[in-house]
Image 1 (cartoon, rainbow, N blue to C red):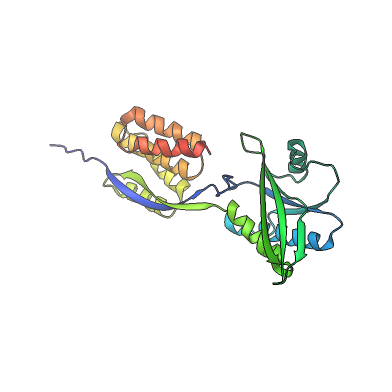
Image 2 (image 1 turned 30 degrees about the horizontal axis):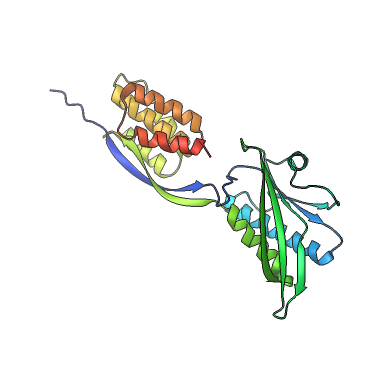
Length: 260
């Protein structure tokens, strides 16, 4: 008698990156930062150090390397609406970026008795890869020691644009076979492309369940690599061959990511 053993489920726990608190998803995008100057030398120095700190902290968060975010300065012109879409689009093109941030000129108040200075700032952003194609405006006020205020404020502002991370559990399917174990080892090492190569070798089988498991795993790996449309194609094929209990949960996650 020949006994066909069914698949087993392997749970893998991952820290998954999500868009920032601002709602913007900057992962994998080329970013530029522009700050404006006028005749206020103190304000200009503050704005420059704020833009520098802002860019530096985003570089660290997104792992793009120091200096990867271009920083530019621009002279403020009276009567120009810098939050205008066309103006921001021109900046996006001129800086050769996917996303551009523009720090408007500051409004600095007098030095208070405790040595702090109040200021008001406006920050504009255009994400050229955003399907809504709108200029986002962020405004804030605070009080800082002027000598260190720009850098400290830039770090604070950047926190709203850093990635959010969540611990999530995903399911991978496998059979009691050395090749399936090796594929799992690749996945555990986050070598998703290597795991895909191994799961692809299982697709020539006439066993629809095994083929579905391999296709489901490939869909998961494509999702991890950010290939959401391709992930859905593989999941559709898996469902067609032999729908697995975990298919709907994975499909929901893929569609949620595509909606960002």
